Length: 459
Ligand code: ARG
Image (tube, rainbow, N blue to C red; front, side, top):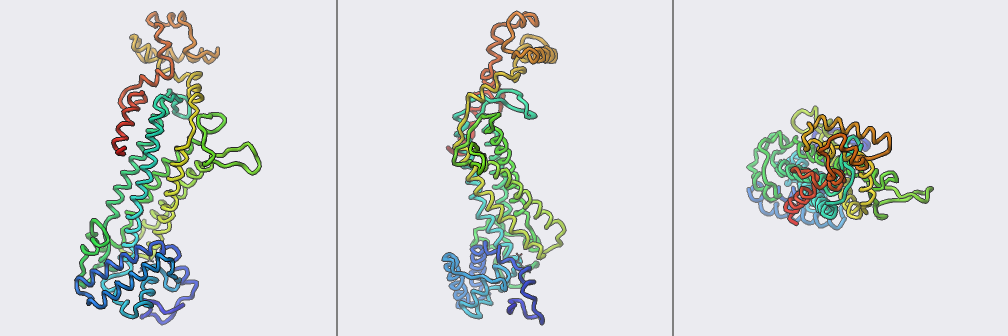
C-alpha cells in the first residue's frame, strides 16, 4: 500500500486487502462529476474570501476543469490505494498541478465533501425520475380516455364485486402515481440543502462563505447545524422510501397484468415486444417484463431496510458506516429508471379484450347490488332488500340462472313494485354508468377524473 493523503501520524501501513475492504472507489466513482463540481465551488469560494490567493486558486480551478474534461472523455484512472472518489480526484489534481493541489482541502473535510456529493447526486436524479413517472401518467390518461365505457369486473377479495369501467381502474393508478410525484418533489426539499462548509463536524475557523458555495452548486438552502449536515441521510432514506412505494404501485399493476393475460382471464394481451417465449414450450408467451418489475420492487425495499438499519445506531456525527449509504441508492436509481421506461412501453402497447372483460360481468352476480338498490328505491328497507337478493342469488346458483334471467312473474312475487325497467338496471354497462357519486366509476365521473388529470399534467 502506498503513501496515504492522511498518512502523517501513521508508522505502519495497512495490507492491500484491508485497504480493499475500506475502499469505496469501486462505487463512489459514480459521483465523480459531483465531486469535481463540489471542489470547484469550494475553491472559488476560497478565492473570493481570499483564504487562498488568486494564483493558487486559478491553478487549482484550471486543474479541476482539466480533470472534468478527462472524466468526460473517460481518461481518468482511479485506484484502490486512493480509497474513495474524493482522494482519487485530489491525487490526480496533485499529479497535474503539483503540491499547490494540497491547498484545495483548506477549511473542508471529506465528511462535508461526501455529503455534498451525495446530495448533488440525488438532487440531479430526482427531476428525471419525476419526468418518467409523469410519462406513465400521460399514458394512463390516454388509455383511460379510450376506455371510459370499457366494462370489466371490479374485484374485492379477488371475487367479482361490481362491474367497473376499465378507464376507472387505470385512473386509480394515475392517482397513486400522482402521490409518488408529490413525494419525490418533497424529497427534493430535503435534498436541496448544502452541507458544504460543515467541515469535519464542527465548522471551521477559516472565514468561509457557505451561502456562496451553496449558490454555486445550485442548492436552495444551507444546513443550519454542522453536526446534522455531515450525518444526515434523511434525504436518502426518503428517496428509498419513495422509490419503494413507487415500485410497490408498479408491482401491483404488474401482478394484475400477469393474471389478466393468463388463459383463465384473457382480458388483456401484451405486445410481443414486452413478452418472452419458452425454450421448451413453443406455445408460451410470458409476461416477463411485468414479472421482473414486480420482482425488482423487492430489491428496492431491501435497500430501504438496509439503510434504515445502517443508520439506526449511529452516534453523531460522521462514522465510516455512512459509506454504506450509497450503493443502495445508486442501485435504486439504476433499477427504477429502466423499470419506469419498460412499464410505460409495456402498458402503451396493451391490447384490450373488451368483449372478454364485458362477458365476465354478464354471467356472474355482480349486479346483485343493483337489484338491492332498485328494491330500496321502491321503498323496501335496504337490509331487507339485501336479504331478498341474497336468496335470489342462492336460487340462481342452484338452477344456473343469473338475476337478469329471472322472469317478471317471479319478480312480481317479491314485490309488485318491480317493473320492466329492472332489466335495464341489471345490465353491467348501466350499472357502471349510473355510479355517478363523486369519484365513482360512472362514465361521467371517470371523464371528470380524466379532465382533471389532463389539467394537472398540462396536456
Ligand atoms: N468514502 C467515505 C464515505 O463514503 C468518505 C468520507 C470519509 N471520511 C472519513 N473520515 N473516513 O463516506
